[in-house]
Length: 216
Image 1 (cartoon, rainbow, N blue to C red):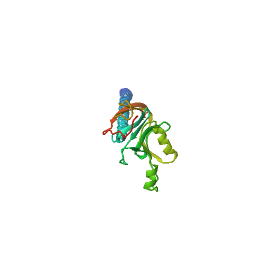
Image 2 (cartoon, rainbow, N blue to C red; image 1 turned 120 degrees about the horizontal axis):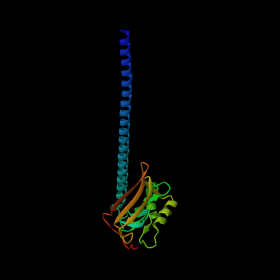
Image 3 (cartoon, helix red, strand yellow; image 1 turned 45 degrees about the vertical axis):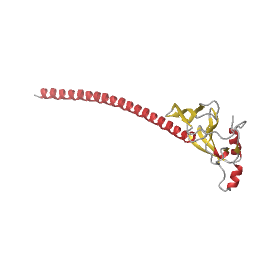
Image 4 (cartoon, rainbow, N blue to C red; image 1 turned 180 degrees about the vertical axis):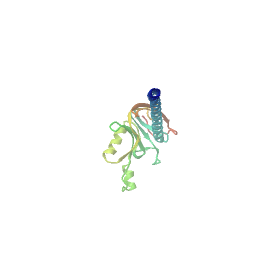
């Protein structure tokens, strides 16, 4: 009788070990499958996040560039990494004044696309501002970048950041000259989620207006 009971106990113990091994094997297989699935989900989420980030940055760049280009009267100068715009005729003379110009340029050191403009101290009188607000009646032989530098050297310029994290960029226009340009295309390379993304934007001047007596 004891011999049979001992055999039965040994048999039950043997089945328990086998069941344990099977359970561990199944658990390992399930765990491996879950890990693979989670890795795939994580990769998909990262990919979607990168795509969303890219779209958001592209939309932001398009919106901010559009806010300047679309409402401008004309392009005064167009280079690979900068565009100079006659933004408005705030002096109502149909001529370009320094305070009406916007310089959109890439800062190579900070990799930020910036808008530069002439600004005068708040404590200046209107007469002093008017006197310092240079009027340009011709585009001939004018270096608009040097115009900006002259105001910067006197501490009469301000800047605003438009788009950050730009690796490289290039402006292109549809006109035979700067003043004839009505459409500006921008190609940008930006670092997003440890990857380099290329973006293209295009914006047209809604109401093209060349200042009086200005010729290239």
